Image 1: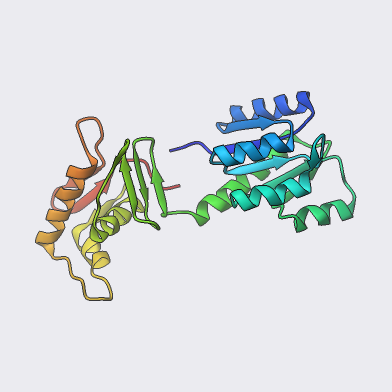
Image 2 (image 1 turned 180 degrees about the vertical axis):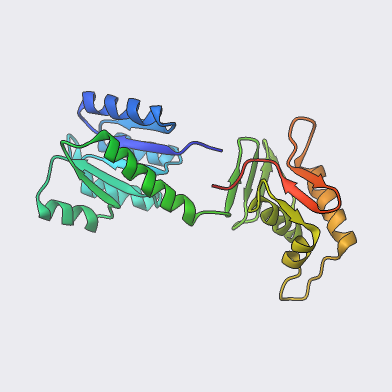
Amino acid sequence: MKKNTILILEDDNGLRIGLTFDLEAEGYEVIAVSSCRMALEAVEKSSIDLAILDVNLPDGDGFQVCGEIKKLQDIPVIFLTARDLIIDQVNGFEAGADDYVTKPFSNVLLRKRVQAILKRTTSAKKDKVYEDGYLYIDFDNFISKKGNEILSLTPTEFKLLQVLMTNGGSVVTRQMILEKLWDNSGNFVDEHALTVNINRVRSKLEDKEHKYIKTVYGLGYTWIGEHFE
């Protein structure tokens, strides 16, 4: 599964390098910059999952850049600053912060705050997008890609994949799948149609190096790709 990417905006070189090392050691991708301009350029060019922002910066104000970032990408923001007055914290939350940490701070607690926010925001996106570096499926927008190839999946095939992926690692019986695919509009998928759809999905997604659906004979199917987190 794709690593979470964290943007750090901090003009103190030593602190920026230390934060980068610490977060990369935890398995995050880090984009570390020292100015508001560089931060906005990074958000325009890259997909960011969380931003850690200083407030007092050489070319602007962290509260203002927070608003600009959220116009480009709706991502969580943690302010990390020496400004510890109550009014500063109020201004930070009004600017759109998800958390406000004052310097000096504990690296351990900052990591925990990052983990908690990412867990919450990832949970909110659960079951909507699947990505494993080869296969990409956006269930909200009905977009699917295999490598650089755009796939053409039917609505039933999207539903079938979502049922399997959300139960990744577990056996999903044929009856369970049939119940999920029989929607309120009366669009019914029978046993034969299910087999046809499974085979069709396999032919679209799989090759010799990439296998996703395992048949458990007499029971149903198991998704053996990455799991939703």
